Amino acid sequence: MRQTKEIFAEYSRMRDNGLDAKAALNVLRYHIEVLSKPDREALAGMMRTRESGAVVGSPAPAAPSTPTPSPAAPAVPAMPNPTLAPAPPISVPESSVPRPQKINSIKPLGNPTNGTLSINDSLAEPAVTVTPNVPIFSAPAPAAAESDDVVWVNCLHCGKTNQRHEVFCYSCGQLLEPVKGAFDTRVLGESLSTPLDSQHFGPDSVLVLRVRGSTENYETRPQKSDHEIIIGRSTKGSVLAPDIDLTNKQGSDLGVSRLHLSISFDAEHESVLVADLGSANGSFINGQRMMPKEVRVLRHGDELRLGKLVLLTSFRHP
Image (cartoon, rainbow, N blue to C red; front, side):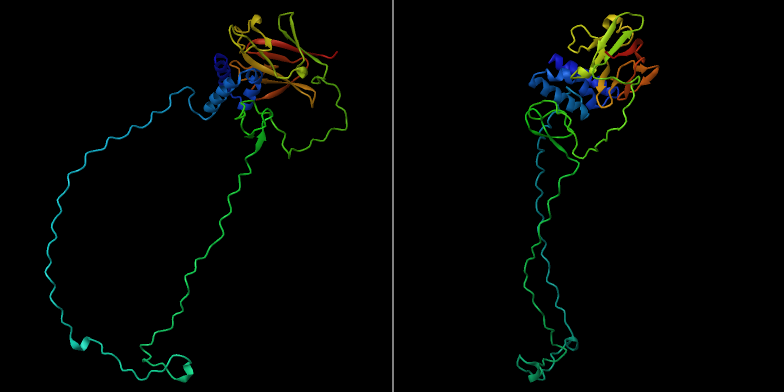
C-alpha cells in the first residue's frame, strides 16, 4: 500500500503541474505494471476519485437521521351544520312560459320523398353521425441511438470491453493500451531520403549525457527501451527510482525532481524526444524553458538544464 500511495502522490504532482492524465500514467506505467491486482485496483480508484474532483481519503457523508415524528395536533371538534330554511316558492307569470307548438303532420321514417317528417321545422333536430370510439395505436418511438462519441475497446489482457477514455480495465485492472483508430489518415512516405542532420538518431545510435564540469558520461539507447527513460533523483526508501539518477551529482541541491524529464524515441522520424514531467524547477533546452506536456526534439550538441543542473548532449553513431 505504501508503494501505491507513493505512485499516486507522484501522479498527483504531475497532474497539478500541468501534465494530462495519459502523459502522467505513461511515465508511471513501468511502476504500475509490477503492482499486484488489488494494489492496481486501489490505485485506479484513487485516480478516478481525484479526477472526479473528490478528495481522496475524505470520509463519506453521514446518512441523514430519521426525523422524529411530531405529535399529532389536537382534533378540532366539527361544527354542526346549520339548518337552512326552505326558500320561498317563486311564482312565474303564465305569459312567460312557452306553450308547446302544434304538430302539423307526421310521416314515417324512410325515404324523404314519401312525405315530410314534420314535427315543425323549428323543433327538428339535425341528424348526428355516431363514430365508434376505436382506439388508435401508434407505433412506438424508436429507441434513441447510442451516442456516436462512445468508443469501446477490448482489454488486451482479459478481452473485456471498456470505454475508450478509461485508463484501467474494469475487469482485470490492467492498463488499456491505445488502439489505432479505424479512420486514421494514412501518412504517405516521402520519396526523397532525408539527409543525416543533428537530430538524426538511428536504430544503433547512442545518446550520451554528461554533467557539465564532470568527466562521467551517461549512455543510453532509448530506441531499445520498452518504456520512457526517466531522468531524476532517487530518494532513500522510495520505490520510484529514475533510469538516470543524478543524486550523486548534487541533484537535490540543484533542484532536480524525483521524476524530472522523460526521454523517448520516435522511430518514424528517427529522433529523440524529451518532455518535462511537471518538475518543480523546470526543464530548459538551450536556455528555453519547456512547458508541461510540451514535447521537444533533442539534437546533437543541445544543452539540457534540469533546475540548475546542466547536461551536455551528444549523439554517437557506431
